[in-house]
Image (tube, rainbow, N blue to C red; front, side, top):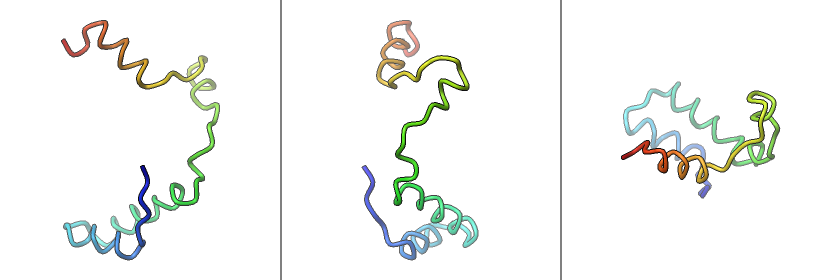
Length: 71
């Protein structure tokens, strides 16, 4: 789940962990679509790209496990 973070504190935390100021600013800016819910709408990109409806990740993983992907 998303936990809101103050942008300046987030950026400072990244820099404190060794990230450059430029890279930290890019990652901080990447949070904006999440914070403003611009990433929330369901789109038809999968169907347009693959020619089929999207599948639930749990279904994909279950099928892969049944086929021995991790066995």
